[in-house]
Length: 223
Ligand SMILES: C[S@@+](CC[C@H](N)C(=O)[O-])C[C@H]1O[C@@H](n2cnc3c(N)ncnc32)[C@H](O)[C@@H]1O
View (cartoon, rainbow, N blue to C red):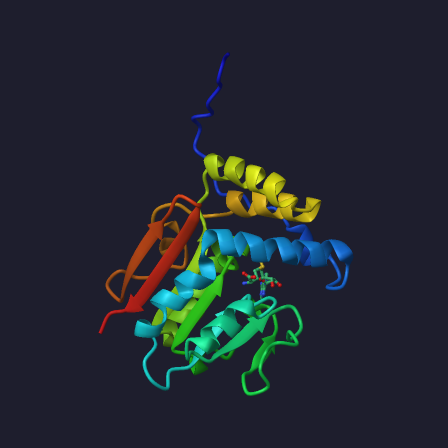
């Protein structure tokens, strides 16, 4: 048997995701959101935010979740005592509490960053190219004290593992496509803080990855 291993570096590539183009009630979109719940559970994303966030959020600090989608991470954080506002191009989810704000807008058009000391995001930053990430970083650099993000490691091995997971959980065609292109738009090493333009003299950060293909960034402004 001949095994061909591609040794070329996997360059970051942005491809439009199908879910972003479907009406929210389209059956394929509903199926894909179900799959996303499964993928988040496998990646342990909500558990990770629930573990790392409480010590980083000072009493009274306002938290903004960008790309908050269906609001599930926000609901979990609320149970852990962290009340976040949400931002997404999508409409406010029905589960989002009336006491919390929902900004329905493109993150690049949002101008309320100054209200938030902590910005978090799960599987949102890979949607942006280098120019978009730099613009977001500049907006956050002015006021934000903490950035916590969970993304995907850009490696072919994780595309293969993801394809196997899709078979196991019978993910639909939208999820199979969007997951694969999301990994191709993911990050390695310090790429995310660097593309956000975080200045190491102003910020300290920690990037971790794990065997499931999760890429995690915790960045804190230096005192
Ligand atoms: C892969 S989903 C993740 C949703 C949620 N964080 C989760 O993990 O279930 C990406 C989300 O980012 C939102 N999104 C993508 N690009 C955006 C942008 N430029 N501004 C605001 N929201 C955006 C989409 O509407 C979608 O809800």
